[in-house]
Length: 248
Length: 357
Image 1: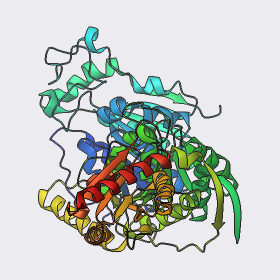
Image 2: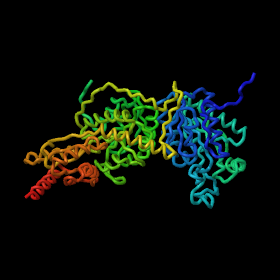
Image 3: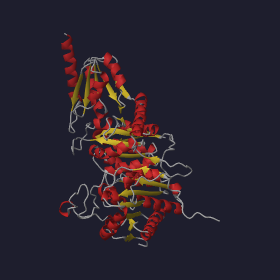
Image 4: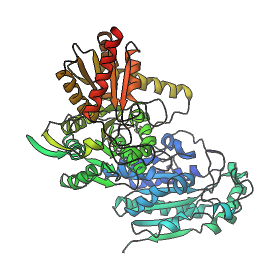
């Protein structure tokens, strides 16, 4: 008898992703969808979509979505979660959205121990607007607004969000993962699953930072982009669990 | 159940919101509205509601957006500079058609301005304030009783039209104490089948959104909004008139200024002058049609505001400049006395008589 080993998760619609070739948003969307299916919480999940490349997440996820203004997803998710405390509420945000304009919102959501999960996509650049410098852009990295490379004397050094948030008591679980190879994808899925499970147990703010590629705005092929991520991004943004406050 | 209490305007808003079924409040401290926030901090836990002090006005309005998107009756409050910070979020609420109540207890501006009463946010409140073609319903109380009554009405209208409603008061109304009768009303529960509160039994996800990348779709959405606004203009104009029948001069004022103007009109009437008072209660929709009718029967208008002249533009538009529209305003937190407005009335009426001779 045949059995189905691989299928589209119920938490994804059949809309084709609009993402560029080699972009890793699609992988992360799928991981989230698989996790929500596995936890059996699709009918009680409310996602909060950001401004950025993933603004159209509401076309791809097959559950309720609230689209938020730039950077404010954690505040919007706070409003949703306070009204629906038994629901699973998560934000999906890029590095321009979360680390730049929305820095205050994510810090204070963590400080309140808001029972939400944040999936933070860090690709070191603004994607949707066409490749500008982000707070996460690497030193000397060329972008359209740092055409001579990120100059530390002028604009400082990359912001390490996971390290920063892990100093906040209200943060329950903070991890950084990558989806550059199958082994890391499995680790990413485990971390994301844990971040949702802990929320559902009512245990506090959880964030998983996912290092991600942007071949289009990095000016690389998808394969080159994965290599660049491994050579440049992972040394700047080491993978691992930064905070797991269980038992504290 | 009904009871009369002595309350500050800011507190009356809070209690009225709770009576209207508001169980979620998100705000940030700013004078002169902070008593409202403090009132909610005390009351919400007593009724199993949610009070949350946000990290900024921006976060507060976005929490409102989330809570409204999930289908709750929700409110935020602030004062002028804080409302500027909320402007983007209010535009999002309007675009996504989320019912919510935003209280602005106005203070002097521009910039940090002052903490004294002013009415200099009329343009911001009635013409949008944020980006895009949208309208807030704007209600302007002139007493502590109306702070309560119009708060309850604000929640009803917000749900009825799926639209943000702004309650526009000022530092004087917020701070002053008057007797207020708070009547418990049976809640008219509003079905919100569009709310993003989890699929549950639904099969189709609900999406709260104001993004339409295709211009045809965004234009259609805008036409839908404009049609809604036309309906609101037809159905929700509110105003009050005093001694208007044979008035040769009509004073137009709203909010706290209308209380001062009323004393001035009464003084003028005692002198035998034919003067009346027109008080817009809904600033948007503005009671233009009624003012046009009055323009045909009176000889002049005097608009009094705590600003350099903002509502006067709507009075001029409404009356199509059929009759002279005079202005008297104070700014920066200064309040006119009724004698000052009375003097203006006297000047205008006397000039008219000179002109007739």
